[in-house]
Each structure stands twice: as structure tokens, then as C-alpha cells.
Image 1 (cartoon, rainbow, N blue to C red):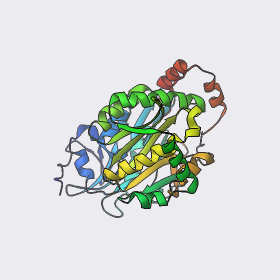
Image 2: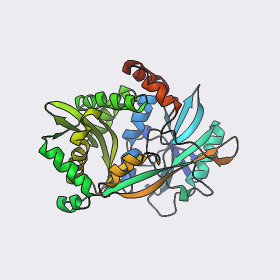
Image 3: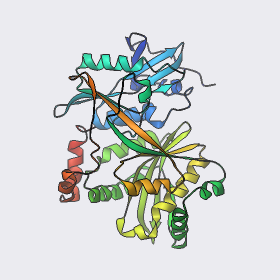
Image 4: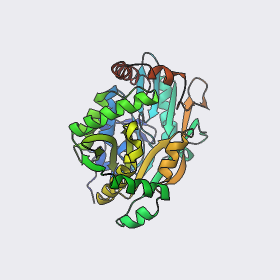
Length: 358
């Protein structure tokens, strides 16, 4: 059994809940070890990525039983002179549900977070997942979520794929697509080149390079992720970023050369990444969130035999003292405007906007 870290002496207390900054406590990840449903998003490494890249302030609401973590809700305070101050659990994170090391222990975390937000004068508190534990919460926006059960039997996994997915994988193999794995900054830089092109095509600014460099340095280096790349005739035509901690691996980002989609590189890339995640000991591969308006991406994920669920977010507005709706901004007028920008200006827009739009 992993030795548990001593409780943080300097943690702020809100009733029975302790407010902890994981960046100030080297034992943070040890506290998570007794919670099977933990993910990379709950780790100190992800907190440091968000803090170093965007300056967000971690405030994680925790319940302890002795020296063991009984429940935890991770929140980042986003403070922007343009968009105001709010709490988000968590920015740039598809889902970050409250964790429970003991059943029923998470219920008191949400009132503590609301009270803290009231004192800090947040505009709102947004939580992504586990809404059933937040008394009175109602969804503000919803997405599809998909996950695949991994296992040592590759044939059994492959047999659960849709027929079109299997044909696409075999075609990519016949055409000579090669899949490579790496965890270096150089591998991330190769991904980022495709990422910028893909975001341009979708009419979205890319996240700043410092975000991806921080992931490579803080998440990849300790062994919690990798980049998978698909190469054809010496060129990288598709790539994806995978993160993992505990039982769960996560497909976090994907990008590709659209002119080469007929080769089906993403089909083979995902299949080889699934086998790699299984070999690394992960039991589940999460595919992240999908807009309910994006039927093509939904079909792609379902093609791997993924189970589908609904990911619900909730937003508590402090001025109105009520849960409010928020739009799914998958597509809008801004996308058309961003598509008109040259890539260097689009990258600059991402550097300027993302710290305010978390």
C-alpha cells in the first residue's frame, strides 16, 4: 500500500472541507492513490500545466478521513480583466468529476466551493461531471462522452469495432501507413504543426505552444502520456496526444492532414494507440467529449465499439444565485472569421485569447 502524505497544515478550512493547493504539497498524488476513478486531470501535473500556462490558481476542495483522501473537487480560479473571475472544474479539461474515496463523501464539497466563490466574488462556478453529487444542480450544457474497455486480447477488441472501422484500419495497413510513438518535446512539436493546421480548418485558434510544451515536460516526462503519429512516405499525416493515470487513458487531442484522409490514417493510429494503452496497463480509454452537433466525430468514436454516455456540465451564477445555461460554441460566426486569418495571426490570437476564455 502506498504511504499516505501528512495532511497539509496550511490548508484553509471551510467547515469539514479543506481548501488545498496541490502545487504546494509534494504528497498530493499519493493522496489520490486510494481513489480508483482518478484520472490525469486530478493530478498535480495537470494542475501545474494549467497554472504555468495560463496563470490559473488551484483551489481543490478536499475531505479527509484520517490521513486518507475521502473526497476531492478540483477547481481552478480563472481571473481575467476581460472576462472576470470564476471557478472552473477544470479549464481545458473534458471532464473532471469530484472523486470519492468513501461513498457519499463528496456532497459537502460543492457548498464549500460555492461559499468560497461567494467570498472570492466569482461570476460563476462551473463543474464538469458528477452533477448528481451537487444538490439542486441542473445541466448548463451537455456533450457526448465515449469510452472503450481495453484488454490483453487484441482480437477481441478488434472484433467489437464496426465493419467500416475495420476496413479502414486494414486499408491503412495495406497502403503502408506507419505508426510511431514518442514522448519528447520534439514529438509534441510535430503534433503541434498538424494541430495548428487542423484548428485553422475548423476556424479555431490553436492553444499556445507553451501549453503543449508544458504537457510534454510535466506529464509525458514522468511517463503519463505520449504522442502517436501516422507517417506515409516519410511525412507525418496524422497525430494524437494521449494522457493516462490510474486505470484510465485519455485521447486528448487529434490532428491530421485533411488531404490524406482517404488513407484512413486516424483509424490505424487509434487502433495502435489502444493496443499501446492496454500494454501500459490501462483498463479504459476515454475519447473525451464530443459536441452533440458533430455527428461525424461521434460516428468515428462509436466505430471503435465505444460505449456512449452524456457528459453534463453545471454552471452556478453567483449574481442570479441560480444554475444557468451556457451555449455549446461548436460553430458560430467567429469560426468563419478565424478561417480568414493566416496561421501566424491565428496562433497569436490563441496566445491572447485562451487565458481569458478558459
